[in-house]
Length: 162
Image (cartoon, rainbow, N blue to C red; front, side, top):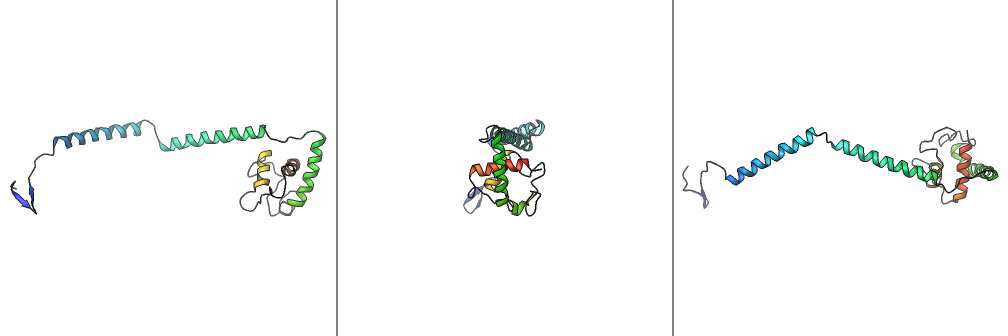
């Protein structure tokens, strides 16, 4: 084609090569891409590995917080007081919990509470949280009806149920 062809006022010029700047930038981009892919493909990096390590760190923090909460629980009765708490807890259980979990805590509408492991944990703080806040799929929270001491007495009673 001739250098003098005109299309809508735009002169067309037939080039044999792209400008040197563009070729240089393309070369740099290709080298960078090869190095980038090589590093991430062969270095063992993976987003799954990062996710797993983040999940593990989060679980470790939760476990440490849970252990700290267990260690610093506000209530750990002893001696004669524990028997009074268990007796009060048994009465409160009969009034508030027996309708769903059965009179002897063997389960009815709600799950069996005499088993060795609960779905949400059988630690003192886990049971307290379940009673106070409730759980999904039917377990209501009782923090509005029962004070902390009453909830703790039910927890003490449940820890003795077998």
